[in-house]
Image (cartoon, rainbow, N blue to C red; front, side, top):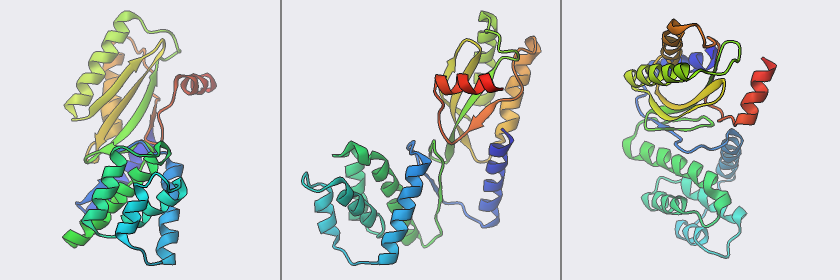
Length: 241
């Protein structure tokens, strides 16, 4: 848990020190490896600096005859220029990709285009904040897994306590709960945290409140913004602990 909390604190500190109040968060859940591939590809095209025609790239993007690889190039090229028409074209494509396998790529191109266009129009430095789980607005998405102390099954009363206390503590801190699922001996929460919130203290407070009723929750838990774990991955992780 501590690493993610430190990361948020350092991020807040960096933005404050540099006087940056305008930043963009990738809202879609794009795997980190796809994000890195996009940035490497974007940088390679930037270094090549080959001239291109905007309207030609837009036509290729919506052509049923262009290959997936060629459309990758079109999306990236269009995202590299501060042009409203280019941005709208990427936005239109991303809303309903002709090639489903380019959904992540078009998401990256859209946020990239938004940053370049915003920088150009405002004359202010824009910052891109990335994570595997994305976010919404000015909040980052996180996934947490919390378990019982001895991996014993929850009682009905404990389930009720967990749901009540975590919902209360998180909503009081303006944390958006997107998904809350309780299993036999653990529960998961997918949520949106703002940068100015101390994630660890909020979750710790909820755990402590629950433990007033019998110390049934483990005080150590998983908190990540890299990926959402499925049941098999969680159960494998718990078996190792």
